[in-house]
Length: 424
Image 1 (cartoon, rainbow, N blue to C red):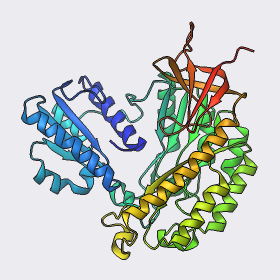
Image 2 (image 1 turned 30 degrees about the vertical axis):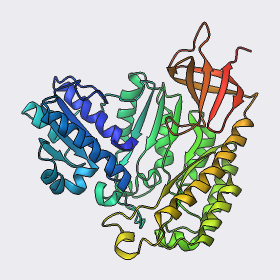
Image 3 (image 1 turned 120 degrees about the horizontal axis):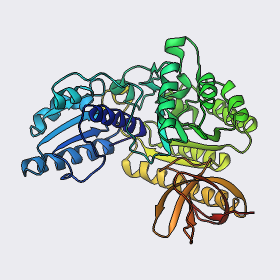
């Protein structure tokens, strides 16, 4: 359950179980194996509900004899282990984010040497997420991640390179660099930001065609990274930059340590230094203290900047966060949702316009999967599962999944492109 960081944790756990001689399947039917491990998300209320519902489904399956053992790991267990143990006694064990490997010990009866750089992918074999740090040192008022995952801990450069080489040796062609805050990489163990150097070193690994960067915190953004993005062909002209808001008053209450003007200057700098870059962002509506005036400013910001990709969360009052301790959740949920809907309607129109501008152009496209009569691919401007996809008719000789092709765009919708293999 949950985010791509959780997925990486699951992939590492799967590998540990496999080298212990245990057969593992991912996201299978509940009757596919006698033991089920649920990796939970605890980020916001809706995610906790989804994870809890999955645990209860598994607990019911165990009560009916469909499965033999049930283990729960991850963020929800980290936050609410005692409560879960009391409410769901059917589970055989609850493990937080810091002791997931204990599941291996419970299932095998012995300690297994850690294969730190190895994972069993749950993604298609041609792309993988590469987690470069754990936890977060930021103090955003709304966020529970530091409570769950702890402080920011960078993975040493050599370990990241070793994991990348392992993934590439297994056929991975696209690496998606992730952490709660990639721009903070290196500050803890090297006493300075080393993300630009890390990206350069990864680009030197033979076999990496695309390197994609996710979750760059706007404050103290390493400007040197933009030079690397411009000069290294393997780095996708794509950046996930969650700005959350543009109103100075709301940004201050969010404890983002950046102003709206500074945010605008950073966006302008990124676009000047890396022409043609696709920017993805995330926003929050209904944060405590957000007025109609603040929201209208945010909406104008979306209209002005015209992000290539954009997602919106409605504010969730999370236990033990700074906001929950110091603010009243004073924006009604209906208003939060109405504001989110207005932003997404504006973004829908922007996305459709930007997509239609691609018609007639040729883009290098990575084929992700076959679906019905189409092969589904992505350009360098799109991340898997969250961004625009390119639909290409299979034809008599369908393109091969996991390969790159030149594709001419023949049509566009709000969040989809249509194309054909370009042979000329």
